Length: 342
Ligand code: LMR
Image (tube, rainbow, N blue to C red; front, side):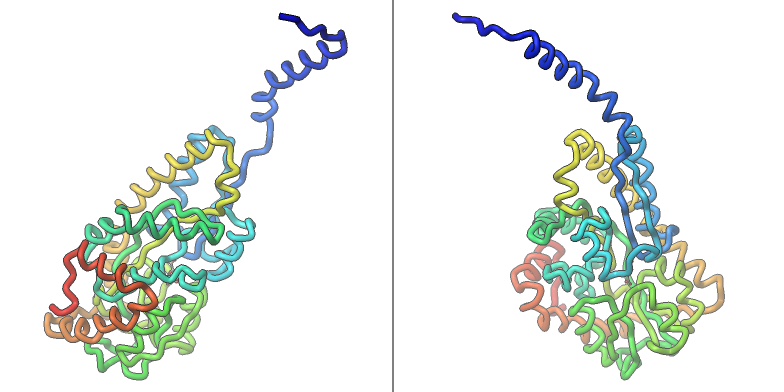
């Protein structure tokens, strides 16, 4: 075998490159951290707010300072719609929009989570989010430049207004703020209400000034936004679920050093467990705080009243078959045992 001869200059260049490669970890360590801007629209003292803060803690600890997570709560950086656009543009890196806010992005199937009464409890819901249906939905986001990382719970919604909402007839002509979901729009129309899409950050003021009469949200959002101070009645209707998909910019995520991404995936897994563990208690505590405040009267539905709500609202499933997907709805029924004719 013929050995190649190197000039002195070539040898020096090679050893120089090797030395630089050896020094690389030191240089990397000295580099500025990778900044992850995590924007959301709710208060810090909510399941999502706490989940985001916990993710920050784990991510920074486990990457030993190579990653810095900046959490921007309460729409301080972007409001509902803007935040998804900002994520696609790479101006923020992580969000956790409610599942009701993916329709305008063109992924309408997420609106299945808005179908009234389709989930009775968190266990049924987790059967979907943690199973193949939930994972296939997250995959659909990839064509939009988005990677879906996890599902985080909030809870089951109450209805609020300045008049008691006990029967479907009570909704007639009531202006109800909704999130940007066509399913929620049909839900309010089925009740005879007038739905009005509005960013979350604007709801308190809209309720206070009478731009809208009422709204729906889990108690943790109602309480932490002080909506109960401007709503005389809160109905414990549990008519629908509100939860989140934690999402990131795909290009950003794929471009992270592999070890950093693995550490962040682990941090997300543990933050998800934490967020989902605290969600129910956060909502129970918020409801108790609303009750104690004495500002809103809390109304419960009798079994007959609940039956009347269900009768009106389950029709919304069929009305939205084309939008959400007939087969998808059928597969949820199958998985949860929901009977639309019961
Ligand atoms: C809403 O807009 O009512 C909610 O989606 C806010 C949130 O993120 O929980």
